[in-house]
Length: 102
Image (tube, rainbow, N blue to C red; front, top):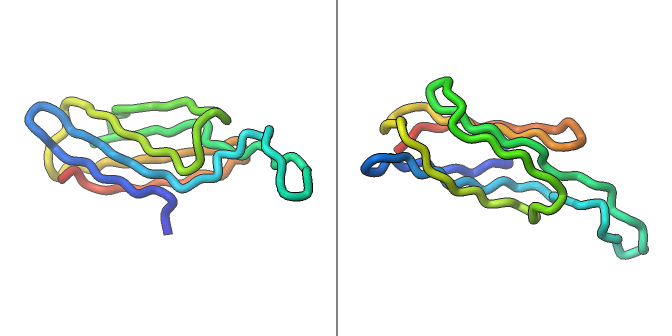
């Protein structure tokens, strides 16, 4: 099961994308119940492509909250076009999902 939930809607002149990514986004500054620091574990890059064209890139760090929500719009997409979202974190883990614009 993917860690990414996404909805992309074609509106008048742009496509609006809303995305929720399940990820702990640990900063490395928080302690667990025993007082030990939780090691950093956070998403570093998010890349969104539509029909082979990169439409959004984000470079994140430990300041982004747990289970981040992302919302943005871009021009040049149409209903039925494929939309892919991929992330990679500081531990080398990654996930991606492909959907179609509604």
